[in-house]
Amino acid sequence: MNKRLISNEEFIELWKTHKSAAKIARLTGISERNVHHRRRDIEAKHDIVLVAASNKNTVAQAYGHINLGINNATVIVFSDAHFQLGRRTTAFKALLWLIGELKPKVVINNGDAFDGAQANRHPANGWDVTPTIIQELNACKMFLGEIQEAAGDAKLIWTLGNHDARFSTRLATVAPEFQGVEGFRLEDHFPDWQHVVSCMVNDSVMVKHRWKGGIHATHNNAVGSGVSVCTGHLHSAKVTPVTDYTGTRYGVDCGTLAEAFGDQFMYAENNPRNWRSAFAVLNIVDGHLLMPELCMVSALADDCVEWRGELIDVSEF
Image 1 (cartoon, one colour):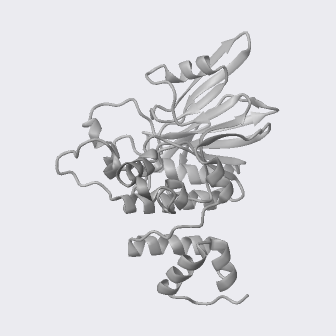
Image 2 (cartoon, rainbow, N blue to C red; image 1 turned 90 degrees about the vertical axis):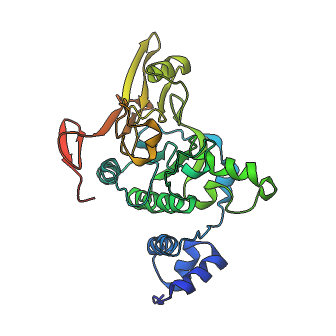
Image 3 (spheres, rainbow, N blue to C red; image 1 turned 60 degrees about the horizontal axis):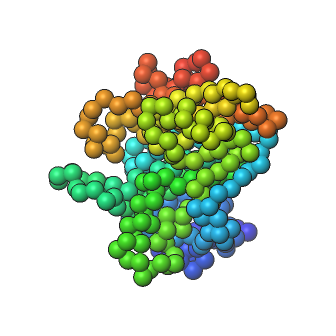
């Protein structure tokens, strides 16, 4: 089909009618990827939300639990991105690079891609200006859209984080009569990601946003669960092996995709924090998790990460 040039206003009307990139691609001859690009650009330019049609399978499993049953694959897990427009972090650039290098079978957003600074239960921090909900939503769409494009055919999973939950919790608290209305849940805006509370990669590897707290969280997660557990939430980026009569399993904290001293964390009052910008790579061979790897932002040079003993420049991403 020949491509048909359409204005932003026409695109908005088409989206309101069809709410599907695939349908608009068929109608206009524009590739589905470019339809997603156009949608995000229009949302940012016009400060609006173009709600996608809900994926019935995703909705049915929203905030549930899944087991992928994967025995041989590479899985990339990132967490705590707290995306903001205009803040393209080194860890995010490295994520795009390594997805292209490793071609993972699954990419897991392990919670808190959305920050919800204006939807939290805490009082305002003086007269600080924080991003609006629509600005944060558009930031998530833009950055997650880039991840989706880099991931190609990889399965996309989003485990619910406590900051992500602010979106629906706030609306359910102040406007409960709108329950079930499209767009009132965070997952309505991201139909290409499967939204769950927890995800078993297989019977021995669990990925979820958080469980135990404190400096020994990764150790306690692996000991208490009896399986390898990959979490976010604490931003600490570390791997803790635990070995007993059953073998070796791992507690993994995949760090934060944000900058440790980013504006999202002003509440920490510029105190020292044991956080690191990183994400995790899980390699599964014959059902067994190999020693998990971390791709971590380096302090040695700008826009560089440490990966498998090398310093990698990711500035071009």
